[in-house]
Length: 209
Image (tube, rainbow, N blue to C red; front, side):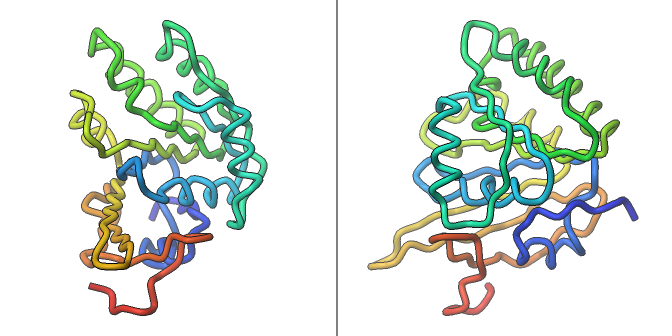
């Protein structure tokens, strides 16, 4: 069995027999108006992390991490801006050290770049470097009103797909996590109901669906 890397979220690590195989690309698909960033914050506590921010400034991301009550690490945060985000992101990815975390937040900006062949080349280079360093890449994909045309390509490259669905029912906000894809392992068949308030935890007020 491949070496497993912990996500830092106990409920997921138990479901996944200890974590995610080293060398994996993980898609975290979630609505923009959700608490999905808690997953990213808690991942930073597991090992050295490079956080590539495509929307928010580095200062904004760092402030959010410092203010969250969740258990976090001290990631290196880089804001990627300008007219060549794929090139700039690729240079930073190529310097990722052994057994590290890479967070791309959100991937949507890169998925929208043209020509589409350049995004595919970026994903191939990313996959090769993550495998060669035994690292873990988490790409945050916004599942909102404007889904990029290459989202299918992203999910095909991904080794693991986390789908977080947030709904408002009555006077409650409900978060349900599905893992429909788990390359190189056994994908959990059940939907996990989560509390996403100060940290990621199982919603013990309800049964697991």
